[in-house]
Length: 146
Image (cartoon, rainbow, N blue to C red; front, side, top):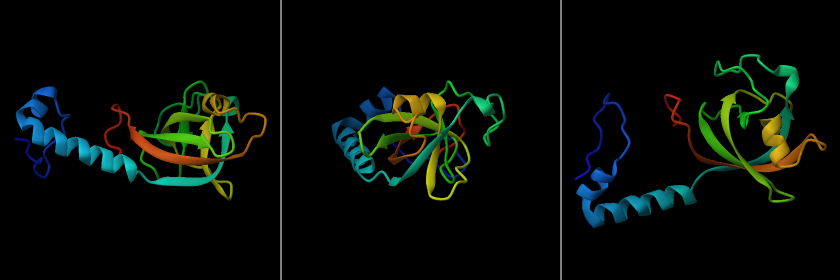
């Protein structure tokens, strides 16, 4: 039987053994819960811009040096380490990025992408495009993303 962690107890990943112990009903409930959460994942639509070489090596708000060659992004409120799928609303092109910085600070913008991420959705020439952002996960190296 899977148990809920106690207050202050460190989180741990579920193992295959945990799922086997839970039995078929437990696995079914777990899968249905995951599907329901994915369906309700919050989205945000707005303008995206990008930043590149001019800030290479400068510290991001998370403390990491900025690397234009990585698929990262700046968002005003999402926790560092959050993985988001950024989709252009006009072409459907998408890229997954990790939030590691704060911004954008230009009015009307919801996310700033690294140069590599911007190239992936073919927005370098336009500079600013309309996108939909959907939270899809969390990077392990960050302490928490929730």
